[in-house]
Image (cartoon, rainbow, N blue to C red; front, side):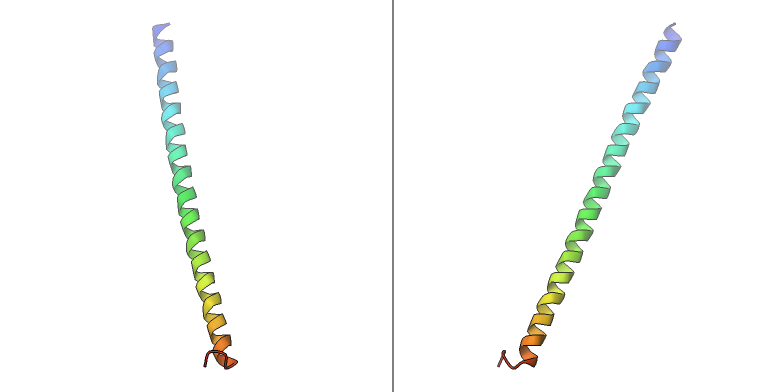
Length: 63
């Protein structure tokens, strides 16, 4: 009976370790995704600003 209890305890520990590892991986992927979205947003914003400046100059409004 003690052997069975020891095996069950070991399985529970492994399960907790796997859960913690999965949670850490999920957090890391969420952070990476957030960073990529932020970079993409910044690139789009910069491109929009460049287009606005180009349009302003081509219409003679920047002179």
